[in-house]
Length: 88
Image (cartoon, rainbow, N blue to C red; front, side):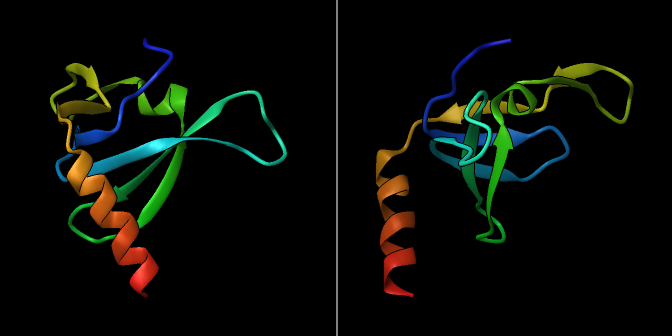
């Protein structure tokens, strides 16, 4: 399991894609970083502990796979997400 994550597009093991924006620190528990991401299909912002984001899980066939798999790095997409949020 890796101790980091880079911004970009990731595919969830159940389907769907997310844009990872950055790592954040929980305001109360500063021990484990949180991965901040936005769902590409629904536009919902989420945060998940880094260890959970990088976790190996079992898919519907019982095969162990990464929860999220890196697909591509897109700085333009990350900038666009922030611009869209600012316009709201």
